[in-house]
Image (cartoon, rainbow, N blue to C red; front, side, top):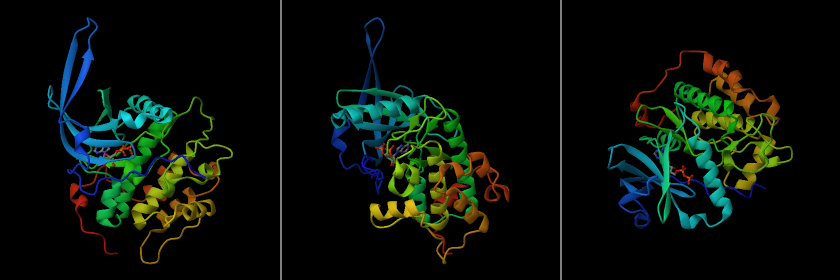
Length: 320
Ligand code: ADP
């Protein structure tokens, strides 16, 4: 069984209100000891609360020096007592700071004080695809095509750098003020030492986890991200994840059996159904590559806009 999952990420229902404001000071000081021995202090002004995840709380931070506004992921050091938690955070930082891509949340800087570790990230003003889908119920296929292309671009970049994200889900796909998707949260990512290497650690989020990860026997690789992409495409079009049930065990059984269907009350194009059914295949070697997906009819049948208008953030729930 998947027993070492992180606690589920629950974005705050009402960003701006902080359930535990006391642990992060209003002004955070970064002390930098210079080579001559002098200490330099950089100050950041804590702004609005953005949300919380399994380990981190996220706030807007404004640099007093430059006025630059970033998202700060704040991790209480007291929560890092277990060496595994510490290792995970170090791995997240090591992988994330090494990458730069248009559709990946940009890592900017990290530091610590007595109580917390702070990771400064590119600010994504428009929450994640999770909140967007909740507001909209489901998205139009043209929007899904547009977001899918951006996610594929991010994944191609990561895989080319031998990084598997391993926790690809709506809640980790942030949206910036230009309506671009930014893939974030590298807490479960793995960097392979060589291309054929297999990973064995069971990780992921129940609804999006690939069958070979649940199986665990022969290890897993890049194809787990392709599986999760298939789950994402289904979820955005249909409005709920394909294997969702009220308990995790039943969900895992459905994933093992690949038991999902398309509801009658939602219109889904044949191209979309065909692509989803090609991706959600048990044998990872039979899944399409990211290039295959780009060349699939679902992404080739019309011109896909490079970006979407912000009006789609507030568009009323679709009635189809
Ligand atoms: P964890 O690793 O603990 O799961 P996350 O990376 O998921 O933490 O971040 C927790 C929450 O903080 C997210 O759900 C989101 O609401 C908010 N958040 C994270 N990164 C950003 C960002 N770059 N811009 C804006 N909000 C963010």
